[in-house]
Image 1 (cartoon, rainbow, N blue to C red):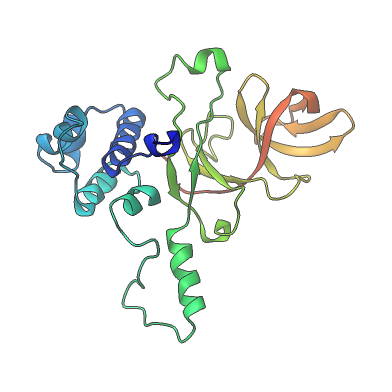
Image 2: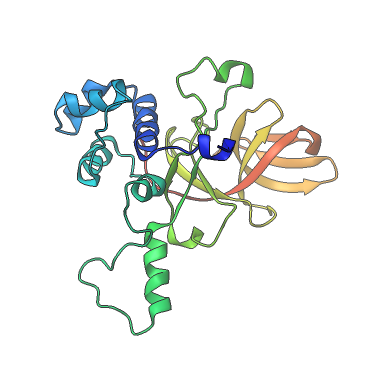
Length: 239
């Protein structure tokens, strides 16, 4: 048997990874999650504590977990449980005479992007926090990002934009184009520290940025010190 087959995740494993992500982000245990979702504690604990048990929760149960936690069910979870990849029309919407138009609307409703871990802490300290880096988490994305394969989501890593943007706000970024003056940048340096800055200009030495909204304090960052850069394109909510 090939290594690829051995590494394939079962539907139950995919569900457990999503629930583990929720518990990690919310700082809850399984009992607290069950209580908030109005489920029997055994529903969650049996799933987490007995990997050999054949029990897999239904999509209805997972929706209760999503509503209680504020974390939408990732597309890979619904697909692992056998849900169709495209949602049916909602709110009694009639079928369009153009199949391609209806398919696009359905795709826009279900489009999701990767939820990345970013932190204002240096790499040496990030591992010590409970916001551990996790792979494979996804969240629904705004419709304008549906065709953007470079887009991703993240939580505001610090309070540098308060009171306009609170720490913990769910935000979206893209790498589809190069940054220009007055873009808000998501900049990660070589030490894995991520920060949001208003771009004032680009010259041969690097980026010239505004350190905080409402301030005139500038910050410079050389090109050689940048590990990753993206452009902020939207925000949704706070946690």
